[in-house]
Length: 460
Image 1 (cartoon, rainbow, N blue to C red):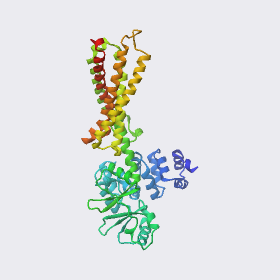
Image 2: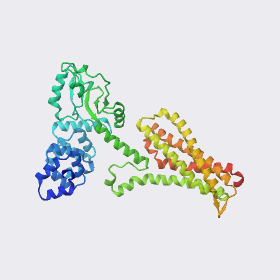
Image 3: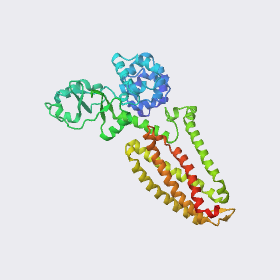
Image 4: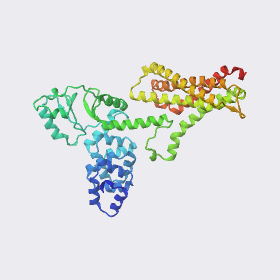
């Protein structure tokens, strides 16, 4: 029954002032489940429920709520309760909330924090946006390099209750510089008198405070760690970043890349939270640019108007030609953009990409050329109800064009993301519609250039 608790049930319990029963019901659920329920409720009701729940549980629930649900709840909580929630939140989650709010609101909320939490919040917000410093938390366990395993375990029992993770313990020297990290499992299995520096000799990987968050994702992926230490320029340990924070970064970056590849300016809120006019603004810019690009396709077709008048049948296959080139280019752009994001391809690999896509384009073009030949052979095009006399030439023109257009599309689609990255732009900007539009224009030129040679007798 408790697992099926939903917003209307909570609203009814609030109206009936059944706060004790409501508290018991919500405490029986996981904070993630409660956050999901609260995200669909009116912020006024959520604020009421927050006042009757334990402060540590409220902070846990609030951390799991999306920003779009957090902000209105804060506006409906009294100053005292806002201070309680903010002080109980994990530093990294609190930083994520504060950086999304307007500057004046952030300053007001920071003033509600305790001196220690205010110092932490100010320090984390002082790091560049999208840097590792914004993600890290100071809630970790660090031990001295001259301690024994027994001393380390005793220290963990004393200070580990409110730490972000106890799976990894960090060893520092007398100046706070990172020496190594040790898994808790190895500590528990070791002799209490063993020096901690002799436990688990494994490579030490650390992030820099100013390092880009996307680079940190790659380090996590390569090292297979659940948490990584963060050090400053002097190698002093200043915080840790856990894998759950990296998952959030991956989700955000992947969503942004997908939206850009679809020729949409990245949304700054969930789809249903963006108002209609905001959505129109996000989409109109790129859509207008692509529309203007499409005009060049019209100009290209108009340029070959004379050839079309002499061989009307050529116009029948224009949609087939430009769609084949656009589709092949879009495929290549998507594959290479993702490979760049994962680090599978670097800027120095451009020639390898070119060779692969050149061979792939020729092979794919040949496959489509065979299909086109079969289409024209078994169903010759008709004009005015009569089969055209030179359908063999049309078939040959179509086949050669498809090989050229598909090959050109794959080359453009694969190299454009690399080119954009080389000049410091986001490869995702080489969106599939953008590549398709570019290949459309050149596809028309290739098509009629081939036709002018193969069908020279007909077009003369």
